[in-house]
Amino acid sequence: MTNLFTKEWHGLKKCILCLIFFGGTNSCSRNHSPNVMVLPNHFKIQILIRLNEKGIIIPTYWGNDSIEHLLYWDTHSPSWADFNIIKDKSAIKKSEEYNYRTTTADGTPIHGDVYICDKISLGNVSFFNSLFYDIVHQVDPGRDDKIYGVFGEELIDKGIWKIDFKNETITFTSSLDSLKELSEANVLPSRFNDGVIKLDVLF
Image (cartoon, rainbow, N blue to C red; front, side, top):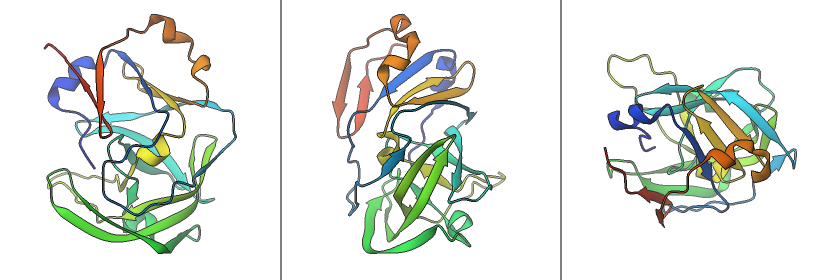
């Protein structure tokens, strides 16, 4: 739900960025189950991504449908989708146990229903029993924006991610050792607070 990029980030796209998550973050007040199962247990996939001024866009498939749904990849948001994804999906049902109350990026309070999807697929990796918020998609005036949701933190923390902005790909893996490029990476002093990674950057 937060924008991943400002204009300054476009100058950094040529970098290869490794993001590592070993536990769930908690950036919102919510009532959510953490029991998402990922199969296969050991995996490494590389998929093409799209980039725009709002962030990183990834292709997903819900249930057994062959329809591609584009989602923003966002480390500081719960997963959510709107009616364009929820409608007519036999793999999706409303949760009788959970609901949400949180705020948008600009601080607007929102609340509503939580749904559960039997299976969300990214490449050949599947996330089973994924909970997500039902949030109305806000279309920007003058834009044909067909991205109706967010692939959020509770799914992102199920593995290790490498984002290659130069070649516009994401690698998602269950093992840090499978990322051969780590020897070329730089260690940056960082501060971790409430699900946010803070870096001191000089432009």
